[in-house]
Length: 250
Ligand SMILES: NC(=O)c1ccc[n+]([C@@H]2O[C@H](COP(=O)([O-])OP(=O)(O)OC[C@H]3O[C@@H](n4cnc5c(N)ncnc54)[C@H](OP(=O)(O)O)[C@@H]3O)[C@@H](O)[C@H]2O)c1
Image: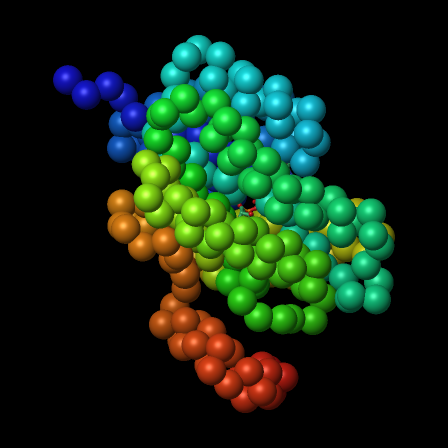
């Protein structure tokens, strides 16, 4: 009888990460989750708390993850933070915070797991964003952090072509979570009630789409409507027209 599969999800206390725990649990997987808050949601079979933007806590979390001698079959590096401020208003310390979680955390966690893999295959899924694919007002830092992690993952994918390890990249469009309320603004504080409405795909639909993506051989997956995909294509082929249309959008 095959042993139960194990998934480790970062940023699993709510939003897309929690949706993933819930979805994989219904599939019979053993679910492990991480986020800063000390207690995990009921969908986590095991909870390993930690602030993944801090190097010492990343080490603690990975040590704890592997201390029972098991190896996760799937790792979803999902923890991320939004940032909403104009480029001019962006304080360097806030940009560092955003990059520490959105870029450095997935890069370092992957490296640490690879170091400890001892011949066991690694399957890493990096959650980026379609914001990585084009520029938008007040999203320069967030988009740059997601673009950085996307190109990093693309490079790792090239390095791992002839190895047993796998990396995949997910670029969600808008998903209905509290990400905007948690996003930090130009004052370095969460937007909270200052955040606008943020409605798109449900976390359940997103989790299912991510799970489907992990079963495909394709590296990158955009989770958005055909019109958004078409717009991204237009951006790549004719950026001037793309930005003209974006400016005219109501
Ligand atoms: N929602 C969207 O529309 C959307 C679109 C494209 C991409 N994404 C990406 O999808 C991912 C998940 O987004 P979401 O919408 O689910 O966001 P969310 O609802 O704000 O959830 C973020 C998760 O990350 C955790 N987290 C935050 N800071 C952390 C830290 N320093 N260390 C460890 N965990 C931390 C949070 O838990 P704690 O507060 O307990 O730490 C929470 O579990 C992010 O990478 C985001 O950029 C989201």
